[in-house]
Length: 394
Image (cartoon, rainbow, N blue to C red; front, side):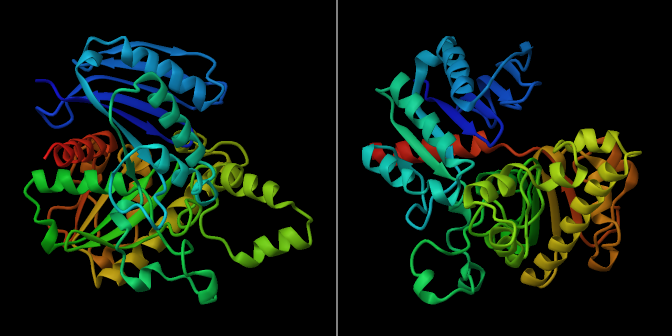
């Protein structure tokens, strides 16, 4: 009997949906995605089980609700929809309570609504996706899989925030994100014969959202994102690490309202701000003659290099570096800039391999293995859903 799972992966500017089959890794009966939601260049495309792209179209997709409706309508029109057994949702923030996937019910939805202030750019979209799927597929079990799960048991020192303990007793701690992506990367390494329990690994998920994670014994021990999806590396439109004094100054001396400041930090900062034009790394690389665009690229790579070096201290060295995410997997120029000057750590790229799209991109005799490949968050979610269903049925 078929056990297909519909996976819904909501990002800050995109929505992806896929029907996955358990018979083979990454086998999709159908997939679709809406990209650059809210922009003038929004794109909707569908991919068949054979991998053929079906009629990509540019159209008005003003918000995530519209994108969800378009994708779910298309998914339910597929023959594979008749064999669905469950729906899996990527939910960015699990807060202090959710350390494992959870079957969604009214109580869980209520708890997730309380987490909106912790991830205001993502949680409303995740809740909208859950509401739409519950409405359109009311008879299927729906499972929430959290980006914070992978980091839930960070070492105590990696969790701490140096504020008065009366303020950090409950939800105020470092969480970490992109956990489903990092799970996917480790799965790929295991399938390739890597004993991840014996290596010190740094994974770099670089895209519109960006973070890095340090893993030892197969567990997350440190990560660049903390309490929110704002911290760590500068991102497409998010600021990354910033002196809190700057925020106090803007509130007190510039008279910015908290809501205005939140808008700036999440949606008007990062590459978009430094380049004074675009958050898209591909466009920035194409505009190298523009000093502001060039500076945005160099700033991003400089900050990534700094954070990478810091994470090696958490591990006591590094054996493997993996680039993933839209930028990490697809931009040789960015990988080259980040790794430049890291020979003292044993990180040395092979220029030809890096530029030709090979998975292994480190020099032949380099002490550190460096790789670049696509992450598969949808597969990680589907795997969690199948495990959850087996537990329910046991």
